[in-house]
Length: 329
View 1 (cartoon, rainbow, N blue to C red):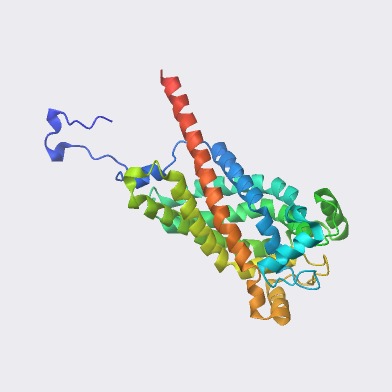
View 2: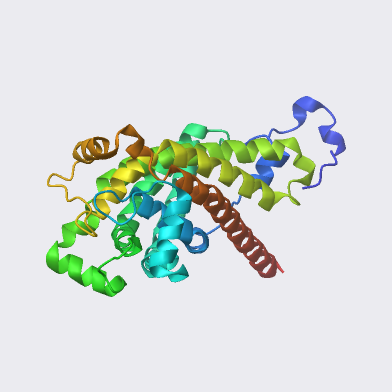
């Protein structure tokens, strides 16, 4: 827009005030307007796939550390868990179940990010500093995406266990349906939502706040450092959210792996019942099993996910802008 004022607008009181938020370099750089709903879904799907595939070995270690009962690993440390996996299955053992995650992560993250963007736009009222709106949007996104991911996450975790009785994804799905019924795929859904709701609220609020703060440090170089900003903010958000929600993640793993490799089976399937069992067997420290690999997973995973997501959004933004320019000419 031409910023030169014509003579009739020399008086300040005659200059029209635009009906939009005040321009700020960091805000302008962080906004991605004009994307279609399907573009958010594609960007989110790509981000989710890259994130989970890249960090899958760390997730395998975390799962085995959290599995209690008479399972082969008693989760003393990351080093012992890794050594046990390599001795029993070799390097390929770190990737058992990756097929299930590949099938679930793409669709789930497509839902996750598209719902987040839709809700953020609806809840924020155009205010980019509305952290409550970011947190609420994240909660809505996780409730929707967990409904998609939970069945494949259960299959993935059962395959990740050392000496897993399943030959692969299809074999696990068939046997669970035959032996335990369809409900087994969603045995941990309530726990997963209760875990991921606060996880996502902390994650999104921290991410948006950290991203905006980092951009305000050096607004003139925001374009050059965009990916670094998103990666740094994502890593900080992922690490903090992961640490705070580890106890519920342990409960989720117990519910998804119950009855497999000697892991306990819970009659009621309630969170209270699982927590009591964990405390009885391993004390309160049992609720923090796997917190180290969980943080080691979520910090880089969030950095990878957010930077990939924002890069994909930028690609679509540029594509839309070029198409608009082409239509105008």
